[in-house]
Length: 73
Image (cartoon, rainbow, N blue to C red):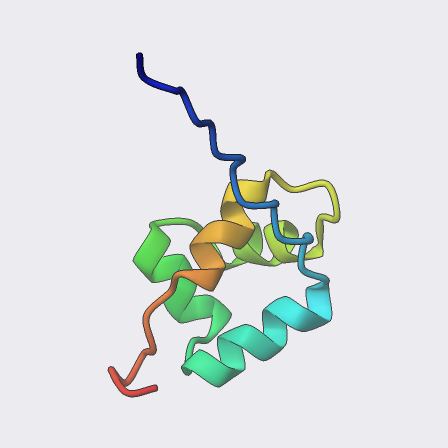
């Protein structure tokens, strides 16, 4: 007889604030313009997304996963 073990998913990270997003982009060497180009969105849309406290969580996930723009951490 086998026992079934279940693992709980990792807790969701907290939504980032506008200031945290801007700091993350700066740390990784990204501008809003460069991010807009990379994601094929307008710079205005990127600004709206950053400012929206009710944005979908996948934006924060994608932002956290951005590579460093210069390829170096």
